[in-house]
Image (cartoon, rainbow, N blue to C red; front, side, top):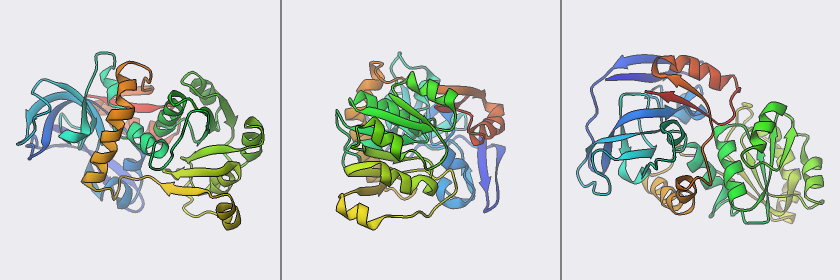
Length: 323
């Protein structure tokens, strides 16, 4: 089968197309004929830790048709349309753990379904208990709101009944984000938004801040928080891995700081997150209250161009490869 691999070292990451055998599903796994898969920035970052090593078949989420069931899989049947977190989505056939898949509704396109597995699961873990604990009437701040996870967070925050503030360096992106639920946009790429957040919340500050930018804005996120505010960290596109922490503000205000990553997550941790997602968010996707935002679709032989597009930071939402 045709496939596209990520080859990385400490200085660069490039793509290679290869012909490889169709994988065989093991116990608890499903073989999928892949229809679409998305690009996730973490896969494309230089260095082996984030994207899984120096050589990896690309595509951590996708959508397609069940082609074959591994031993012990009873919740799906051959021919089912499915989507979720998968392994090797940049190939004609891909493998997924059965518990990481959901049935695709006719309401969603293949491209929309392929956008969910990583970005929306990550946003879910950032926002819902046991970490983010966002509630109706609270305020959510999303720093770097135009990314795939950022858009998902905006949509989930709005669905929960929160006020949503987002930052982006592009006024055009902020305009697009307003159409998917963002209440207030702050046009900036720097750590200079705390005063505006306090103004928008009547001096209180935000209850939950999501950091999709990195260390360059961490201190400003802390300055934006209300008492008992929380900061969730998932991205560092600025390349800044260290940040100032005001320990006095942290303990006096009972702030909480946490991170969300799948790089070291166990199979059970991933399964637990998906169980919660199926309970809390999947119904919103099924009935159209949340519609995945697809920015651009590329053909399978255009994955290098898709990679360049993602790395240009031009998108609002997800970039998808159609097979």
